[in-house]
Length: 200
Image (cartoon, rainbow, N blue to C red; front, side, top):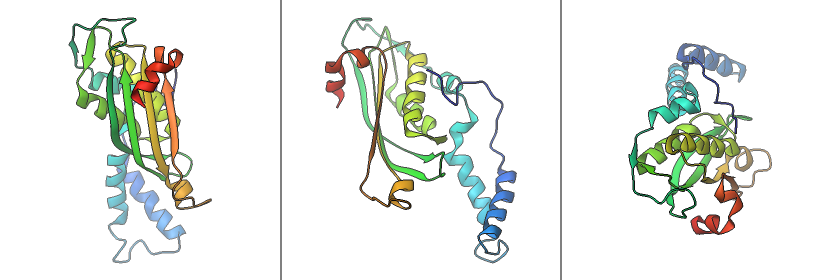
């Protein structure tokens, strides 16, 4: 499984460039970036982007290395149906097509351990970091699954995501109640429907 954030890269968010571009956007909108209410807007937006797009600084492999503390456990191993599930992890992201907010986003991550487990808070941190990019909802699930597989050594991973997309709710078709559901299923979660039924 390969995504947009697989390849090693040297990248840091350029806040100075963002400030200049935001000034240009304000001008293009017909406003004056030097007026009182907008003077500090480019700087505020640059700081916000550095925070909400933090995950763009890292590849999936680098995120896996960040959160790779695992614990050896006496779990049955391959073929077992022992399962770890963390439900309703709240994250947000921005659609790469319109840079529009994906909100009310809840992520469920499940995996079948093979000799080691990851701290539960690390699962939430992985989901959060994978979402903090210009993304597609489908790719967020793929990225989380890839990172989880690398950290835990498990090939049996499920990532379920539900979210509202402001590119559908606030513009275009304007269907405020529309939710998008995606699932990324690896290994036994793809081939054994009963496992998936246990986390839904």
